Length: 463
Ligand code: UD1
Ligand code: CA
Image 1 (cartoon, rainbow, N blue to C red):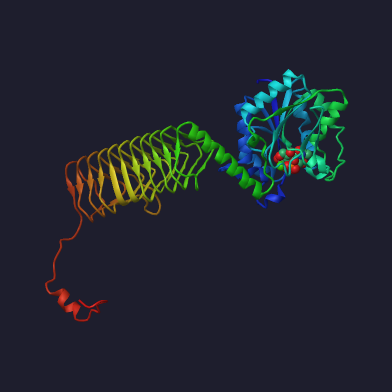
Image 2 (image 1 turned 180 degrees about the vertical axis):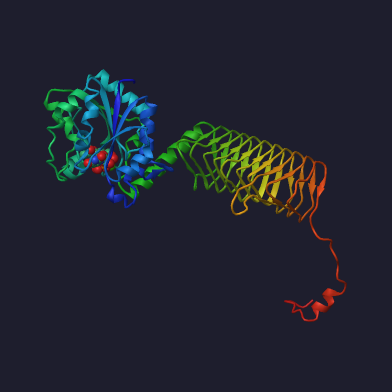
């Protein structure tokens, strides 16, 4: 689609959303709505995009970066007025078609965009409206048909009683022949209950000029859903989450219950993996096959290999290789790499560290800024002391080392291959290979101490 272009309307404030953010930055499944729309356009291979910004334009601009060109609509006078603000962009595409879509309708997908363009070209239409049949069309513009063909779009606020009964709605995405759109744009007048310039009026204006208007009815009606308030935003989250879970199940992913399960559209899960309740998977997360994820786990922007068990754990921006057990109650923080056959048990935190294959960190341990080799064993309660209040330093723990319980490793420090640290030691100096690092005072026992103490001690229950 090297010639086709798109305009994304994103100038609205979205008062009904009650958010400090502009509406188009409100998230559906952890991604701002505008991000969904830009991705769909890019996946449809539309290379030249222009976003119309208005309310808090700087905030939205910062978010979209240079993914699209931008124009500013200083006053919000309606969807047609927003398109007029991008007239210069349109004039550069005078012989092309333009997709116009709304940034508060995130589920428009690249297939629908392409299919609609196919209909648009095949029917030689000046405009092709992407529509959908919704059980509950409340809030959307209705598609009015005469002899089976689209004759107008009527906004809910301007609709007659019988028009309100129409279930076919305007998704807010359209392919226009640019030349024909420019010809009628100026003729759109704000003659409606909201005194706005409605882009939807373009249909009847084009038809009046003898042009052709087509529709492309979306196969899946969720494509058309938009959000103007928190209730519809929740509905969008629920609808797409359900859609994704169904898709994963068709691909062989198992769900025992979908309670509390939320999955972003950018997540992939291989077949044979089981997702337990309370699991949230978001960002660019990839999960291999044969895993059990959950219950109550959150994985963001991370790669998980095959046959892993992640139980009641949070993982961010990290890589977990095959056959790894994590949890319950672990926190794997960004930039960690956990090699195969590692076991990370309860109440363990790992940050910016690499754990070699076969290493075991079973309980109550903090591993931060550390390079840990293969087959290392951490006893209970080990702490890497990576921060001295000014700098972060690294610990190196070599293959086969055995770190005794409650060892403090004060970085920078190196534990040699196959060496030990004695339980309770605070290790500040490197331990050479095959050695024991021990740092603690000699034990002495005071005879009869307890007897003297017991005289005054109150016992809760009689012996
Ligand atoms: C619009 C459509 C309606 C359709 C629905 C689909 C019109 C007149 N109505 O209604 O037929 O069923 O979307 O969700 O088009 N915007 C601007 N500048 C403006 C006004 C709006 O950029 O001056 C942007 C908004 O940020 C939003 C989009 O255009 O992303 C749609 O505007 P909104 O006010 O939400 O329209 P709806 O009432 O939902
Ligand atoms: Ca809307």
